[in-house]
Length: 183
Length: 189
Image 1 (spheres, rainbow over the protein chains, first blue to last red):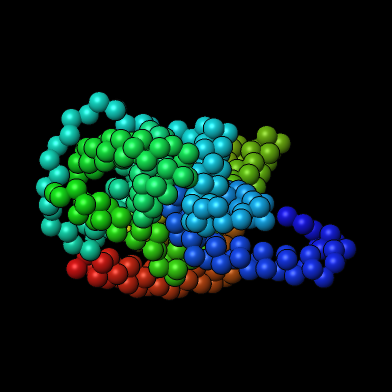
Image 2 (spheres, each protein chain N blue to C red):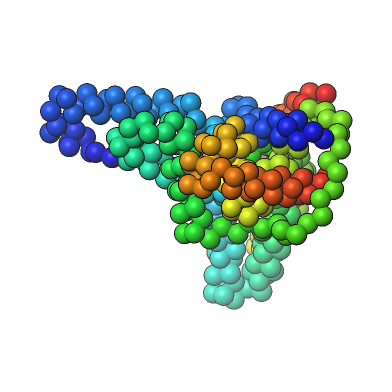
């Protein structure tokens, strides 16, 4: 990020560019803040780590934003950066979230009566279940839960759509099993 | 469950997950800050009083100073044991959702209420011991008990003020606990 002194040295066009960039950046964060927070929380164990990761994501977006020329949607652009930062953060901090046993029996997921409290508890269970997924399934699950389509996920992760489908099918089975186990 | 219904349901749960009321988040964060300040204060008290009495006992020829040191450390250990037990699992929310934040607030509130009773008991025990100890020290100088107790009015005033403060704090925390429990039952309904 440029310093104030650097901005002062720049011409009026550059100052205007920077103002536009800042506005765009703020808009992006405002529109996607909750999604990014959930994403960061899925890769970390504590609120302080989550906030650190969020800050790193914000910095990476700021750096990459001037180069963004609309080759993909802003959402795809944002999630691609966020995921790359999350993976880098994970490899650096070696967060230990126990992975699920990949070979699990898949129970029937029957409907359950849900009160408000139960619904909120289930939301917490879902987050834990997502956190426990192996990375390759977790990435796909998070993006699907954030409402991205297979083609967008494929763009974010740089894999084929069919691969996204395969991973999501596996992720769902693991999520069902994990949620069942938590109940 | 139909796969798409299941996925939609998960999406709703997922996207509602960070919708923690701002006041509740702020309250929990403020409590966390105060807990850290309280912990730092406990460490200072332990170092000053615990260390101070040990230093005094190591230099004093009087055996009753050893008794004072032992009693002081007993009070410190009791206070630490209680604090660690009562605040166990209360340092941070285990997850980012409303129920967890609310449950944490309720647990912290209950811990504070328990601390009021423990604190009152500990204060009374300390008052009895330290006044007795000082009186024993003074009895060497032949001061009668009645004269001694009436010679320390500031202690009684401080004790009364502490009692009033504890009662006020207890009422405040009890009201807060009622509100939190109401919030939880609303969330449950």
